[in-house]
Image (cartoon, rainbow over all chains, first blue to last red; front, side, top):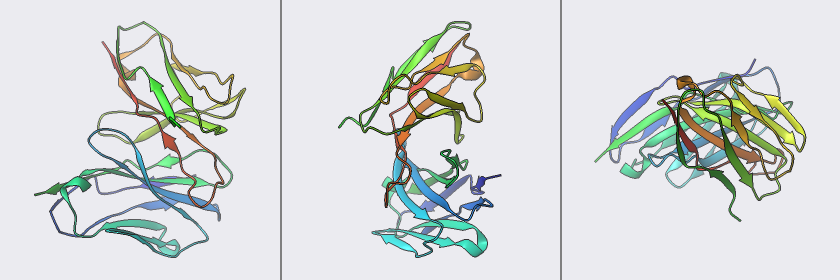
Length: 114
Length: 115
């Protein structure tokens, strides 16, 4: 069975602090895809990144970076020098190659305080 | 392109009433999905479709029905609304396999309150 666990329900940081959001996944498939989405207070879901299981290269996009480690089944998301606009709920998701279903974690609510 | 559109944005239903949530995408995506998001919770898959005429149940299909007569439209029908169906409903579409940025494109959501 596939599963995504985001153990951090809510995190509060002060602006300019770095913060890491954890995502642990479970799957027996060797080919799968991992995603991160952002849901700001306005409610829409915004795609942030997709990572394939055969590509363990870490990715950096501005203040955002993602650390994919197959050995620990983790796909963690780090925001460097957080800003108030980063306040949102962040979801990690998994899709395996044999299905068209996306499995979402329960989300981590990030509060960045000014 | 408008992407994924959903109507209505907000609706109040009385217990036992029925309604249809509309979802349309203009990206020619084969795959479409309906999720519900309860307050403070993650997304749960209700139904999905891999093409016109093909639908399948997700995690929480009870109390809902779907149809997919065209590639663009994927309406969600609520029969006999119950307070437990109070939620925000998101429609999404995707074209799995598109590289490198395959993802689901989400609509803005429909907020439903059943009283």
